[in-house]
Image (cartoon, rainbow, N blue to C red):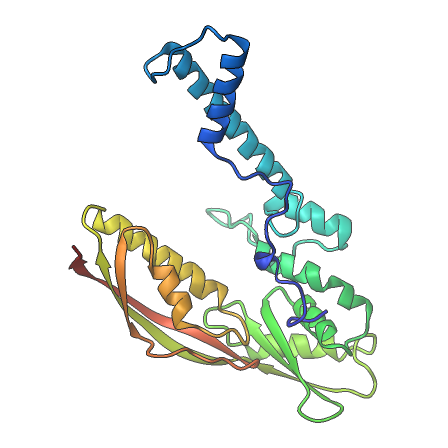
Length: 299
């Protein structure tokens, strides 16, 4: 397994055990059961008290099924969050969440510890079996680079010549440029005699940052509140850009169009960037500025 052959959990379809929920389907089933049990029931208007009772019952059943779905998801690596994810990775991958910053209880006010986020912990768990090998395979080098410090957000591996391994480190600080101290920590860990094969020369470098800006104009449909639509588009764009802040992950026009085209948006005019931002395995794209303007309303 490696960064490039590991299963992308986000692309897996939801398992069959997770139900697709629909209020009308549940309500219709309850109504059919009622009419079967009481054939004399003939009211077919929503103002009938029996209808109201069925609607309340259907809604409660919908909420119960949704809760069951959530409880099932909490047991799956692809969906688990927080303490549920902690238990999964501890039970099946023998990992625990790393402390990024210990905090300071004596400070006023006290500073809470900062822990590794869910996505990084999930990613490490997928690579954990690589850790049973010395750092020869690509995935093993990535796993051990992540294990070297919780400040490592991502890592990539290339071998420009036989016997030479170049490990690129993406920091979780800002744009992702790794400090000298972090590079030294990763280098020392990867060159440990229990990790590095004797025949490998390991070189550790920081990611090369490709800065870019996003500028877009949104044309809205008539009706929706402008601020609500604009905020939804900004949040979706942030989510997309944050997810792509990884080594070797391109920033695509189609991805930004999809993020900005939220309900209420009729048209997206993307002014910058003008083309896809292609990112090599030792590089990362970093958004330095977002400018979203509203260009009026369509017909």
